[in-house]
Length: 208
Ligand SMILES: Cc1cc2nc3c(=O)[nH]c(=O)nc-3n(C[C@H](O)[C@H](O)[C@H](O)COP(=O)(O)O)c2cc1C
Image 1 (tube, helix red, strand yellow):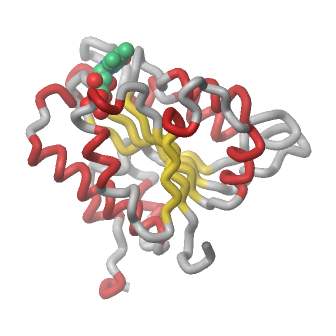
Image 2 (spheres, protein in one colour):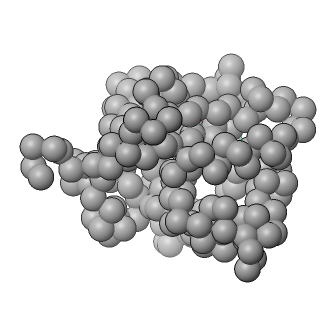
């Protein structure tokens, strides 16, 4: 587990993976990256009976926690909410004595059916996608975690297979770069989404 600079846990949730067009493809780019722990929550807990101790042990062993899911009703699939409610308990995840997650990074990886133009202050949804992720951002802050700008795939219904592949490649490159500590965090924090300019945030060894 200590072979790489950062241990990354991908918590994935899609309640109908057999019907998925986008996320089913995206996960193929990351689930087998060496040194990454890929954890499919609906596969592990189809009846939503989450093993709290197992989840907490997993969290402790990793430096970067990725929450990967489609956006459903401007929020997460139900199992992610259940996971938050049960796993992130007072005295462990937050509160004066709750420091188990302190300093770990949290990255949301999400997909929306709605196009990017809908997720603008003057667009149909009246808010940016970052606004809709506020409960996750604030949860991370209360748990003393370092919340990163999200990786967002907008407009899933009209994406071509080539476009999905491109998102997959960028997802793979960003996760691999995090694993190897090759992400320019200062630049990342300057963007609203982590995947806007991937070439700007990945530090290639030859440029060091
Ligand atoms: C129950 C449900 C609720 C959804 N709610 C939203 C939503 O609030 N905003 C949005 O942009 N897309 C919404 N969508 C569209 C999904 O985000 C989209 O189908 C998904 O990201 C595509 O990924 P997939 O191909 O892996 O399923 C919803 C879809 C379902 C099934």
